Image 1 (cartoon, rainbow, N blue to C red):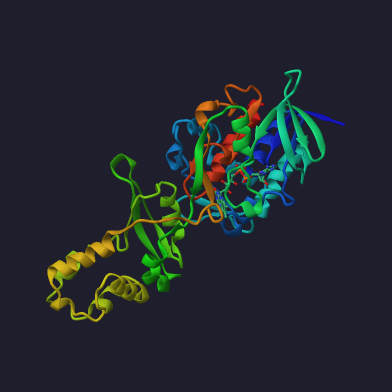
Image 2: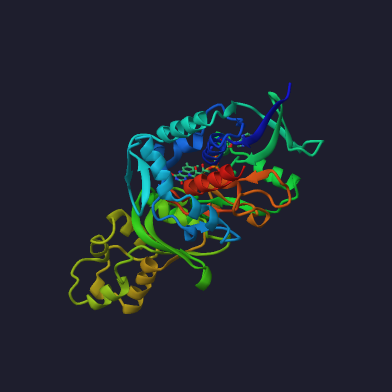
Length: 400
Ligand code: FDA
């Protein structure tokens, strides 16, 4: 027998639970449907298990989108402080880690339990695990019919909150994109973001022994107006580069483009070496090891054709300038990324020009909403993606 609800939210992740709880607490009858066996796995694994649930400095500039102004409305109406008030109301202990990033002191599980309790306060009905087979407009034009493994559900409105393609192993699917296409909504091509970058295996070979080394760098990609730049930690891996610096820049990087890394942002290496020629008694390796891990210095010197035991005093200025370039402006062209298997988020998604920025409803399909990562709004690393999930979930939840 088919069940009737005012609202069906498909996807019980961050955005879906926020939206369902808000609509439920406003008196709507809401059903929350998810195909996963375990609730909100992405929240559970986020922030190394402690969930970086927001960023105190979150604003529209921390998001990428083909339509950059779209996110302003929802973000301004539900701020990091608003989510923090909820966290405080549930007495969840938290701390600020780095650049406004707020984490749970104990476990991401507390955020899941909080959202679950908010859904219960809104008398949200659950269908989980439950496979969604199809979403169609009802024959009488009144709302939608959702065919599921548990039978048909009728709903006045449907909210698609099934996220992006990142980490298929824990249940990510292209459901939101399929529904968008079905209803003739445009997509901005999805691609992995906040993801480690990889290099041609032969070209990377000299750097493989550096795997595990981490250091703070300046990293950039693009030119002029399109230049993106971050100062964060970089991590050498067996296949390429990772760490917050690389995850951040990966969202801006276009295939074929170079990235530029300054391994010693506070030091002009060429200038220091040339001016110090008469006073630096140490060899190249020992001198540079004052600034960088010794293993990294030797690896980089060898990879760039410098003898670690060369005496600085004996080296030509031209060679020292070249070394300065290698360390202060290392130019690399990734051959790709680790893909959705490792990407924290998906860039692109449902084109926001098709949605209302106030309500997240599709302009051409009354009653159909898209929220969270399914939409072409992608945050930087650091709690911004959850802030978008909360804010877009709230915008739809208040409008339903
Ligand atoms: P989300 O992915 O949370 O939820 C989608 C839900 O839809 C899932 O429950 C899924 O099972 C369900 N679903 C999918 N397809 C379906 C289908 N066909 N039928 C039914 N249900 C379906 N962000 C941040 O701000 N701070 C952080 O610390 C981190 N850390 C982090 C770590 C890792 C390892 C990853 C992979 C990601 C992060 N993120 C993050 C990103 C953040 O987790 C992400 O942006 C949000 O969870 C997106 O919320 P959504 O609700 O849109 O999707």
